[in-house]
Length: 594
Image (tube, rainbow, N blue to C red):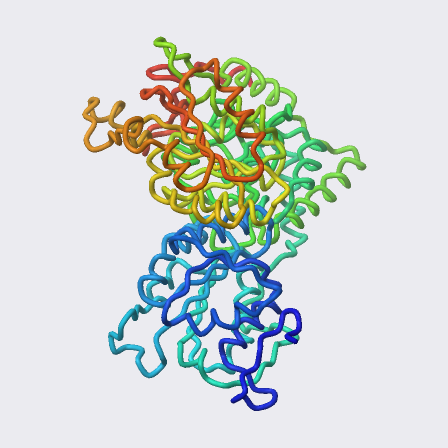
């Protein structure tokens, strides 16, 4: 009888000897892997045989390798564990390029295992050969090519260590088929020591003291919170710091849920489609405390005019991010959780000595901006369905304990604003790379990671048509995700730019998605429940019907008003001072009120 978590030994093996393929599966088991998303093929096939014998690992057969990669991302983002995907050589591996790039941009811990042609055939343009290590070098945290089966355990251990420590990210392990077929012994390393890789997690006490001094001296500070706070699981520490100091908080697209939307100190999301209050908070500040954020262009707008009077405290676990885009007055290298904890200790010590910050006027000014320019939208004059209403009601009915996944575009921005996030790891999206087709497979991975949670994929009709084949994976493997298609029959964000900047010349953005395909029939064909809604009066009942179905995936086609736009908006390349809260409408606030 085969033991749990062990692979069978063939009659030709010597005692203590196993194949490289068996060593790979045993290594993955030792790394704590419970789920793999993948597709077999020639070069990786030797690994799939012992994988069948593993009682510790569930393999989920996806319909496209891109789906495997995004599912591994969703799994990682929802659980905090390393997501794992597997593919064969050549096109199987190259189909993982987009998920790897996406994970690299958004700091998602992921290990991709790929098969490679035999070692003697590498470089000969063999069938299904691609230099996937060279291809992915710029978009992975690290990658390996394994040609010696003896190296498999150590390489897998190092891959998981690298992916999950420091700034998380994707690691590729490319294993030659010859190494999988060769005989070897299994030796799992008891410790990992890699020369040149020792991420700093503890912040320097001198930098903490200097940061505390600037915070106490400032009169207009803002906590600029990025996805690093989510990855560091530092939400509780962030809330303690914010509430102790009274400083206003903005959360980036990658940090939604790190600080409750309902909290009085929260100004919302900053940036190109950020709230007026969040954008004003950064622009008018005299001190930005950046925690796990990277001053990317979608937040800063034109860098030369971004927060012109602000000093910067920049805390990040990746020293390469500090000062990359904006000069930093106080750099702090360290894990966000430890940085925030140490800052709070330092500020409490100052408070015990009678020194606290004075932000009363600043808080009052921003509260006024927030009240004067809240998020809002127009109800379509023709009585059709507003997409913002759909997401507002979805967030209210599904609740803040549900997990929401989105791709990129208008639906992503509306979801970021209108769902309402109270908890970390409940908003999963493609932030840095902006990948169409991300939502459905990411939701699948999140549901596998968190089977007790309701998981909604919020997708545009364009995005949905890129990866909806993974509905088959969900239906067959009992992964009951729910999909809300925000169907405006267009590449919506591109159409919005064409409306605003290209004289309404709609070149190649009309998808005809309210006619072809029929999403309800498509859902049914994939073994899912298909629903549709085009009347505002039916939104609640439709969402509640979807929520009541727990034994199979549900797809809801919300047929929304075509010309709805995302507001507020800062046009690309312009100053955040030029923010519009609706078309041709700019906020009017007086700095003298601060």
